[in-house]
Length: 268
Image 1 (cartoon, rainbow, N blue to C red):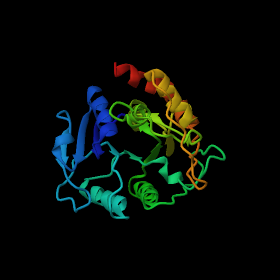
Image 2 (image 1 turned 45 degrees about the vertical axis):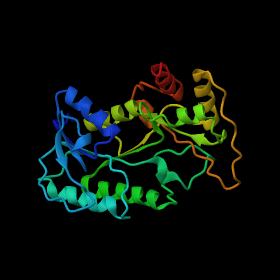
Image 3 (image 1 turned 120 degrees about the horizontal axis):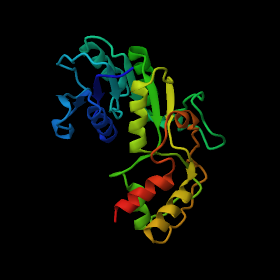
Image 4 (image 1 turned 180 degrees about the vertical axis):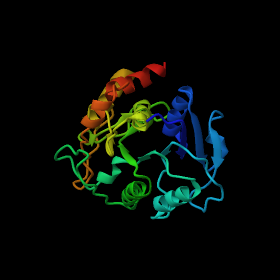
């Protein structure tokens, strides 16, 4: 399908990048955010806090992308989506719900996890995300995307850690995706004729945290950070299988090497 008007429920960095690409392609974008300040001028703004009843009628849309962070209420996602459903004149033809690989926090690094593996949340936030996924499917037949380790311009925490020489658990398994590629993946799902119902938002190369920080340090021309001594019960990370997304998308930044390499080059 080709969406003509898309509703962004949440308008953070990823949603804004996605919305700008849709506007550039000639589409209309409506964005819901708690404050108008973060909504791009090219978007039709709707200022609303979805933790409270929605007192406005939403316009009919062809597609919807939900990128809300978890709220304080354990039932936040379900309540917010119910408010959206009541305010829309009809359900969108296509909905994408952006969740997180945090739903796998109870798994370890023993084997790669693919989209057929069941979530194992161990925190309130993880349980919220799982409930949000279920609610989005029930109400909107949503496609669920679970990104891991989003990075890109303005998301430079790991670079700052390396520059500060903060100790790092070198053996921890990690997964990530550049913000550009996550936005492109969502755009593809909005337009695909037969999209998958569930997708891991990860790039082509899982890596230990040590591999990533050593690369960053080398490109920055600084010493690699010291190794942290991990506690016996420390989270050892996990490995996410990204082959489903890799078959759909020609990554702009297929691994951390290209992604962090560009970020560091842009720092001058």
